[in-house]
Amino acid sequence: DRPVLIAPSILSADFADFGREIRAVEAQGADWVHVDVMDGHFVPNLTFGPPAVKAFRRHVTTVMDVHLMIAPVDPYIEAFAEAGADILTAHVEAGPHIHRTLQAIRGAGVKAGVALNPGTPAEAVAPLMDAVDLVLVMTVNPGFGGQSFLDMSAKISAVRGMIGDRPIHLQVDGGIDPSTAPKAVAAGADVLVAGSAVFRGGSVETAEVYGRNIRAI
Ligand code: DX5
Ligand code: ZN
Image (cartoon, rainbow, N blue to C red; front, side, top):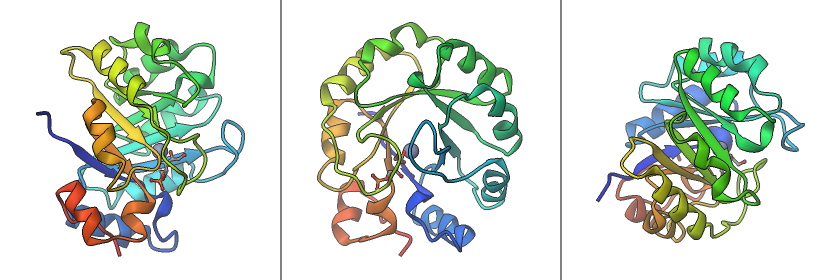
């Protein structure tokens, strides 16, 4: 049994008090802090740029996991690396040169992740296994917190097979809660991103499924 890591997404945190929210989830056992960067172009929503990410860095003592939902990616890699990201994940759909993007992320001294939208097949990342430290299988169409989980079990299993014995994380993101998390883990996921389940409606149920009491409120 591989350990399952929990990465709360601060997209569902109190935007007026990120420091407190980050400290709260870390105090309750979060393994990573997931930061959703959206550009209003690749996805229909706007969130954080490098200065905000740099400010979050002052509070994150675990791992700052930055999910880039932006296109293009390459012009911003250096800025997000300098902002203190430990992991930068780019979408395979964000441009024609994902391999170049992943090389640039590693070249900036940051771990590289590649993300797949729900409509993109697992095969899109097969050629990238030696270029990544993480594969993110989206379980919602990216852009917003609080959406319903899409069952991507077959894709998760396929990616787990591609990973083989490489030290690559398999992350899921979107609609992860006490009832959906076990499905994703059973299919092969080892990093669970959760936004609304952690920052809103935190409950005993949530704590039971995650095996830890990860709630900011
Ligand atoms: C969606 C983001 C997610 C989002 C998940 O585009 O990538 O990280 O915060 O939120 P929940 O857990 O509420 O689906
Ligand atoms: Zn995300």
